[in-house]
Length: 220
Image (cartoon, rainbow, N blue to C red; front, top):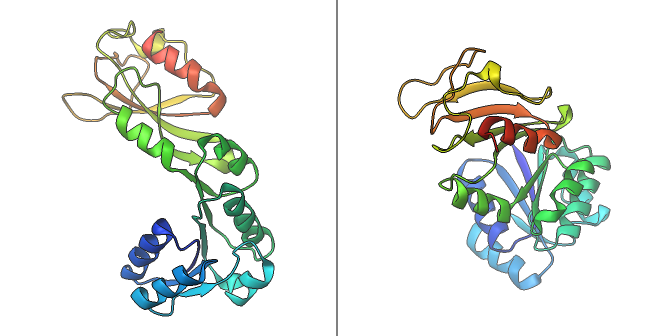
C-alpha cells in the first residue's frame, strides 16, 4: 500500500517507521529541512521537503496513486486542509487526520475526513475505562450511516441492575448487540435478558442519542 504521511515530527517519524516495518511504501512530507534530512538519514529516501497543503507538493508526491493519506502535523488546520486536498483533488480513498484540539473532532468529520484521531480523547478514554462513572467509550464510527459503536459498563449501583431489557426505555436509534458479563460467555441480548452489575454492553447508537442511551442503561 502506498501511504503518504504529512508531518515528520515525532508522531510522523514513528508512524512512518512502523508502516515501513509492515512492508508499506511510505512517503513523508515535512516542511522543516533539518527534520527532513534527519528522517532521510534514519529511514532512507522516504521523506521530501514541502508543504503538505499545497497541490504542487502533493502532485510531486504522487498523491494520485496513494491508497491512504495521513496528516499528523501539530496544526489542526494544516491537517484538515491537507486531507481535504487529498480527498477532493486527488481522490485518495482513505484520509486520516490527527486532531490536537478535541473540540475540532466534529468539524473534521462533518468536512469529510474519514478518520479523525484525537490523542486527547484516546488518553481520556484509556484513563476512564476503570472509572464506573464514565459514560460511553467509543469503539468505532460508521460515518456514512451517522452511527457509532460504543461500550458501556454497568456499575454495581445502577438502578437497572436486575431489570430485563424489555423494561428499559432505549432510544429508538439505539440497538444493543452484545453483552459481556463479568462471569460467563458473551451473548446477544434479548428482551428477557437481565442486566447484571459489571456487564459490558456493546451497542450501536447515534451521537445525538448517546446521553439517552447512557441514562436508559444505567438508570441515571
